Length: 256
Image (cartoon, rainbow, N blue to C red; front, side, top):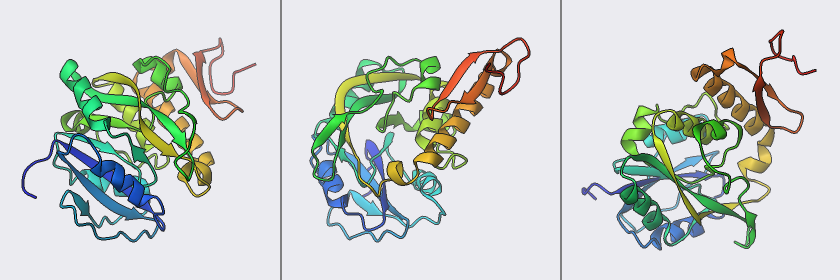
């Protein structure tokens, strides 16, 4: 396949990949067919062969999913890129709706949508948390409302610095924070992505690590934006982070 596709999709695949066939089917069913998908294994995953030339299995040398995703991103060819986890699903009109947002607002660097949580049988559990919250670069510091699906211009992705493996359990949040500092976003108010909830998902197995890495990415963004001169950072007991004005004596832990 020599022609440059419009969209490059990164598909991390873990373990025995029990949901990969459904993820691939959701790609193949897209109303916009001009895409390529780069599938790569993590955690010992073995990738099957595909008869669709748009599906490429690549070998990346990495110690974790964050490093693997960063390595795979270096091989994309499309004008746009996004990530579809090998456990998850796209709505049939996902690419069409997100590309329409770029057509309507040519100056944006990223478009994101609402999402749904589903179980192992694809039954909807609930709307994704936070995805109906209004977006702003400042609001993103405290709430990850941009969710699991972001379609990015490749040039905006590169300008923001790409995936950063320094936060292996919060690469998506860290990238969105950096993108919010360099480009405009558009929100597509439709549930175009289905995030699977199951006992072997990273969200279940590594939730503590995710909390810690999201906090570290948040604190780094506070420093980048020069907000540490006005605000203290802390990780609350309810497992999320807050930003509040400095107290008279300043310093971490001054929360009395």
